[in-house]
Amino acid sequence: MLNFKMTPKKAYIHTFGCQMNMHDSEKMAGILLNEGYTLTDAPQDADIIVFNTCSIRQKAEQKFRSELGRTKSLKKEKPFLRIAVAGCIAQQQGRGIIKNNPQVDYVFGPQNLQRLGDMIRAGGPGVLTGDIPVGDSTLREISDSDLPVLRKDAIRAWVSIMYGCNNFCSYCVVPYTRGREKSRPAGSIYEEIRKLASAGFKEVTLLGQNVNSYKSEIGFGGLLRQIDAIEGIERIRFVTSHPRDFSEDLIECIKELPKVCEHIHLPLQSGSSRILKGMNRGYTYEDYMRKADKLIKKIPGIAITTDIITGFPSETVDDHASTMMALRAVEFDGIFAFKFSSRPGTKAAVMDEKVPDSVKSQRLAEILELQDEITLKKNKALEGTMQEVLIEGASKTDKGKITGRTRTNKIVNFSGNKVSPGQIADVSIVKAMRHSLVGIDSQREEELMFKDKDFR
Ligand code: 5AD
Ligand code: SF4
Image (tube, rainbow, N blue to C red; front, side, top):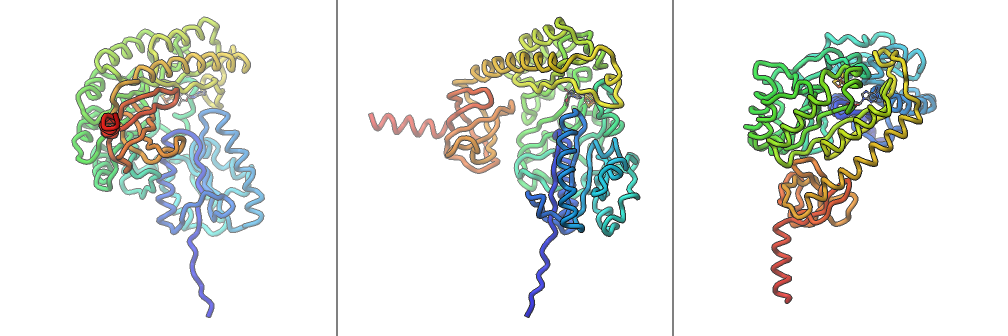
């Protein structure tokens, strides 16, 4: 007798870009699961391939284009294969993507991702391609709690608290791709995090382009206070903060609320006030320094990380020197540094005095070299200290060791008795590296010292 067994359809999701995109992919994975798909790591096995794209810099866009090109032959081999392009490039280029890449079936921007299920259900092969409204930002229902989410991690969760951005930094495409800023109601966020806590999650990272301008009846501080009271959640993080809107109340929250971690990602972008003005950032270097000083004084040991753009139009040798000076002055715990990338549709794209690529590269290399020294110095200062580490699992780089993160978001590889993800261990730091710390669980240390004494 023939045994017809339904094998589940397979979905491959390729994510480019930031944490928002990674979380959006978790939402799409949840939707696909509801539609009867299982996830696969192999695009050649997939029945649907979803590209969740990023247009923040040209490089991310190029990578996507070459990946998309490869799907042409796949589709020829498997005509039933569905290809979806989601994310920021989809939002910006809409139907143009299908026009230039006929193998693509669906195109939808970040505001429309919740419609993925409807699109798949409504469309037979190729039917839907012309009919998908791209860029209809009125469709976004703010209540994300209704969306199924298939999370990658069982301990740490991303939670969207707002969408879009109103800042229009002159170099940035985000306001054009993710639309105007919208805050999610506090009650819906609270509910999602309460459920996460019941499901065993220990850490939440609140996501928004500018969390300091989160608007609801309770404000961002009020939201942090509410989440801090949720039993089971041990750590609260948030990205990204905008230096212009960074408030005294937020400093108080980090200081007072036990679960809010002592780490802030506060993008400086440039150490030159003239360049900051051209970037439309809304603060000067001095404003930034005043806020950073306050943070460091009020919360000793706080880790500050930042983003830097090098080679913004008209950036001079002196402007670059100001950025180098800023790195020395703040002593960031880590930075993400990028060469300026001209993005179509932004104000900076049409600015004169573009900096040649070779100069941008040279400046970027200098910035990274200086920051490497600073990061190592900051990590070395932790040698001999005790750090609270949230365990993530077995170390991938250091066999036989356990890996986790400090409250300040530094990776620690350590030996110890506690092994379960989600447990918290007090770890003494024995050695600092540039990208991680090496430690030993304090309980294990005591045991070893005891053994050592017996031995002697
Ligand atoms: N070129 C280079 N870097 C950019 N970023 C945003 N837009 C651009 C661009 N056009 C960087 C900023 C931002 C981070 C997420 O990406 O530093 O903080
Ligand atoms: Fe882009 Fe500026 Fe908004 Fe950040 S704050 S997303 S850099 S426009």
